[in-house]
Length: 287
Image (cartoon, rainbow, N blue to C red; front, side, top):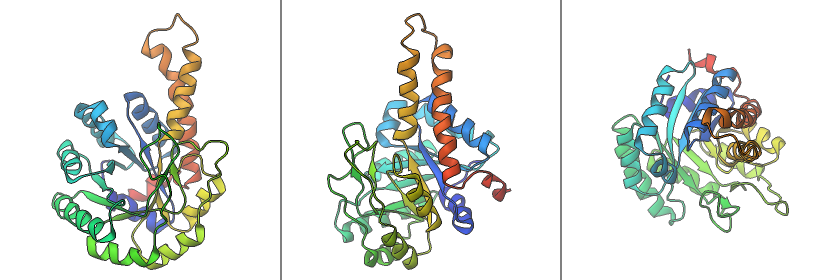
């Protein structure tokens, strides 16, 4: 069942759970995410970053849409961290049902102006829009882009931003970074800040950089009002660590010999995240 993000997250907001947004940039990751989500009967967001989109090409999006239409669970196809109006228009033309416009590096007034323009374009064709206030950190070159220093979301700006733009969801910066954290870096979410933000607005809130944070903090964030959590590095790391292991056998060359155990490794992580976000079985709420 293909849905936009507004309708998908309205149910999560009403029932206090978070929908996982898994970044997919290959057929194998798409297969693993869909299989894990259907097994868990969890709604799911298939997230594709502009860099990933240019790698997998538009034909891949058509495959993801076909999977969504035929699935027994609610599915949203989401542009992750669109950096320009051009990115958004490309995604809408491809068939995405949700887009993120990330203008968080700009001053508040400019962020509002860019997001408002995207909302006008996207809402005209029933596509949902995610904005961002504050900046997410980054952990290295293999992670998605982020700021060297986290700029936490200012609760005083939240109401102004949401009212002025009309965004459907808001990504907040409360202490996460994209990527896998190095051993010497201890992530810590500012849960009191999340409480304050949640008290100011009622739209679904989004947590980016959800990989490698302490499980108890993520679970607490869900209970405090996070309704979408982005997971990219964790499933990819599990997939490719297993891939390196499998390829130690020099005889293997067929994809159907190499990839099944890799898909199973990433599915194990995906299933754990679905449980952690309290999304297991929640597909039944959409019927």
